Image 1 (cartoon, rainbow, N blue to C red):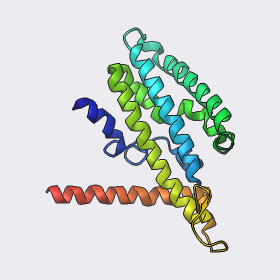
Image 2: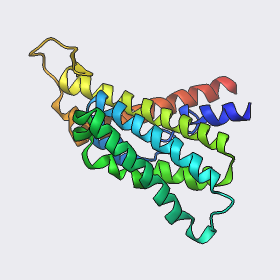
Image 3: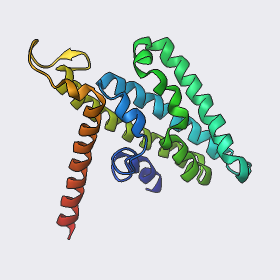
Length: 201
């Protein structure tokens, strides 16, 4: 039951984007298209799970004074592998993600889970924590990317949603649109939480 809790906490209760509000840079920068959100989300899942497992395995022999440099070395190794794989398999997505793919190394979600969880917990729990947080981050990105792409471009995953020539809100695919969409989704989640609290009381 505890392991299941580690898996599902990142999906809602401790959602990295909408509850803890981490990883805002890639969230706002690359979520103007749903396919970009999927690419970034899968990359983060791979790095999170891999680095959590390795850091958890090394937790008993990692000197406290140099743990952060060790975390960075482990994370950067997985990021480099991810960067090369995405470049080979999906060059279009790689180009769209640009500098934000290698910048996963300093993503607050990755480092935060290493510091707050993986270095203190067993391997399986750390792996499930990485999976849950990664999936939570991914669905958050996809929600934001879907809203922005449909309203800003009239497409979804490249497929036409609105009739050609229909007016679209170009602002939604610009940085301002990312902030607006994030604010609306955060407000919606807070409203859901307040309704749940009222129902319980």
